[in-house]
Amino acid sequence: MIRWAFAIIIVLNESALHVWSAYWGIGDIQTMLPLHACSVIIWLSAYMLITKNYTIYELVYFIGLGGAMQAVLTPPMPPPTTFHIFASCKPLLRTER
Image 1 (cartoon, helix red, strand yellow):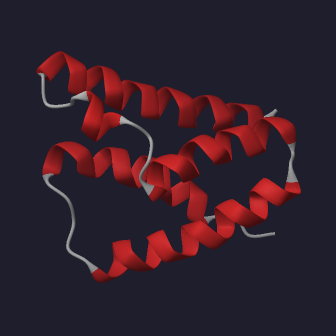
Image 2 (cartoon, rainbow, N blue to C red):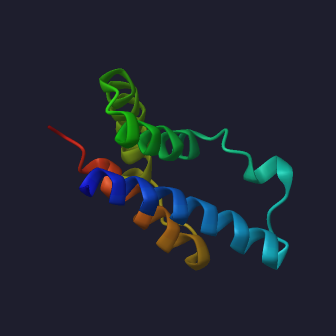
């Protein structure tokens, strides 16, 4: 039940970012495609939570370590996207067994 709630929250949060960006006209198809590491991790983690796929878990954990280290070593993003990044990435860091 909790993993379904996390999966739904992750999908809704990522979808809300796309809707918000489209509404304000700041996102286009080249910048909003989920081809960056964090976007891939977000969608894979939702898939992992739904299917309980351990291989996807290991992949998300491995890619997430690099993204988390990069987020810690670089300054924060501009204010509109800061909440989205913390809401999406902080639960991913707490996926250890």
